[in-house]
Structures are given as structure tokens and as C-alpha cells.
Image (cartoon, rainbow, N blue to C red; front, side, top):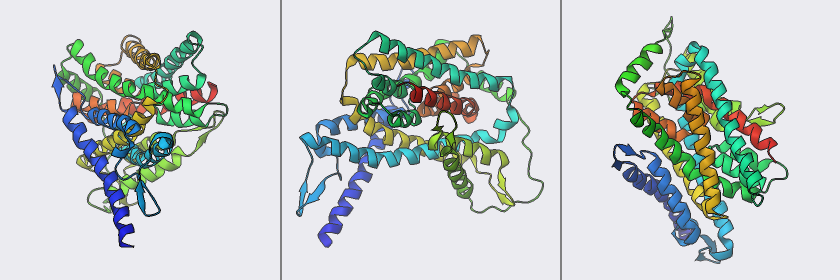
Length: 410
């Protein structure tokens, strides 16, 4: 019994060690600046992907993922790599889901007090951008399937969802009748790396190329988005000092919303889209009867950053494993184009057609590209989390659009 407990503890501590070691190394890499450009939190993704690649070739480094057979510790290798892959996806999938829930809920709660009170002409621009960006990405994917007869539509779906970093779209794509799930998974892994890093670098490089005075832009942005938020007329009861009650309420509400199937396309927003909306709703009303649901900005910032890191670790490791299977350089190029073209064209449309400011423009691009890490980078670059509003307005419509695409693609 003692030996069994020791093995169980060793396995648990091994997994915990991996998660925090990836975070440690990721922040070190992300803090490296080259001409003012840095990966920031996306450095965690890079290390997570690298670890996933190494696990594919050296399963023994996957601490805590061995099995016990007849009292002996047996490491999987060779033909049993699929079992390792399933275990990795299961373990890190939980980390990714928790991270996503924390991040998007925090974003919703931050944007909530102003989001519904600031619906205007720009809001329609965000909605259209979400649809346009996904439509351009889908058009690019279709073009590649016509040019490359050897590439299956399932691989194209995987590349598209990876290039747009859309986990709900990826999940929906795997469940469509007639798709080759292995191709969807491999394509997602191949395109995901550039899909994240491409947008993260884009939101940093564009302001530098345009020589944007960020302090002036932020001041103008805040002046244009000043909204009078009504204060409660009577005293409210605070359940806890940190606002965890309200935060957990928003997550729970979001999970319920995310589970609702959208008619016709039979697609749900999932936990990511649902938690964003749950955060917006709780943030807007800021109360539940006589209970105070306002949360300190410091708490929201902490939960947002923690969620982002956990999401990157949870999504990055399985992505690294999937990156190797069926990898072809031409597929990587296809995925990169599926990321770059919608992003650049979306930016041009937002700037010259919808006349959005640089911060609203880039915020809507991160939402349209469904890029959680890029929003975190944009917040750090701008120095204000109010850019979350453009992300929050664009993100749900981009999710619905990509869900429609992947379900009808095959």
C-alpha cells in the first residue's frame, strides 16, 4: 500500500513539476527583448510546444506518465506513442480548459461594465470584422485544397482552426461526420504555433512600424470611451474580500451558456465563448440581488494572467505532440498564410473602411483571430486593459463563423 501511494504521489508531483517548469522557462524566454519586441507570455507557449515535440521523440521525459504493470514501472515507447498522446491530451486538456475559463471570464468582467453601455456604430464594425476575418481565412483554406489535390479537406480544417487558434472550431471539426480526425488534429498542431506567435508579433510590430505614440493613443482611446457607470443606490453585501463568488458565478453561468447549441449549424460557443459572455453579463449588472458582484481590478488582472499561462501550457504541449505527426513544410506554409492573410486584410479593412483607431483595430483583430495570447500581449503593449472591449465584441461572432465553416466544410 505504501509503495502504491508513493507511486501515485510521484506521478502527481511529476505532472505538477512539468506545468510549473514550463511556466518558469517560458517567462524567461518571453522576457528576452530584441529591438523592443518580445514574446511575453507567448514564450510559455514556445516552451510548451518544444516540450510536446520532445515527448513525441523521447517519451521517457514525460514525468509521471508511466504505467505500473505487475509491480514494475514500464515506460511506453514505439508503437504505444498513441497512448502517451491520449494521456498528454487528457492531462493538459484540463489545464487548458481551466486556463481558458479564467482568462476569458476575467476579460468579460473587465469589459462588462462598459460593454453593453457603449453599443454604437463601432460595435457593428467589430461584428462584421469577426465574420470577415473568418470568411477570408476560410476562402484561403478552400484555395489551398483546390491547388493541392493531395491535401484532404480534413487537413485543411485542422490548418484553418490552428491558424486561427480556435479551440472550439477545432473540437467541432473533429466531430463532423466524414472527417478524418487524425488529419484535423495534425493540421491544428502544425498551424497552431505560427497562429499564436504570428498575431502576438503583429500587435507589437504594427504600432512600431507606424511609429504610434502609444501614450497619446491610449489617452484618446480612454477619452472616447468614457462612460458613466451607475453606482448601486443601496448598500450591497460582499460575500468575500477578493470577489471569488462573483468570478465563479460568471464561470458557471458561462459554462451553461457555452453548452447551448446554436440552431441550424448545431454549434456551441463552448466554455471559451460562453465564459466571455458570462463575464460580460456579471460585469454589467455587478450584483445578484443584494449581493455585491463587483471585483477589484487587481484580482481580475491576476486571474487573467494566470488563466493565459495555464491556457498556453495546456494547449501548447499537446500541440507540440500533434505538430510532428503528418508534418510537412508545405502544410506549415499553408497554415501561416491562413493566419497572415485574414489578419492583414482585416487590419486594412478596420483602418480604411471602418476607420477604427489603432487600439480598437488591433483589439478587434485579436478577437477576430480568436487569439487569447495576442490580447494579453496587446494589453501589455498598450498599457491598458480597456482594449478588451473590442476583443469581446468581435470574439463571439468569429467563433460562430468558424464553427459554421468547419461544420459545412467537409
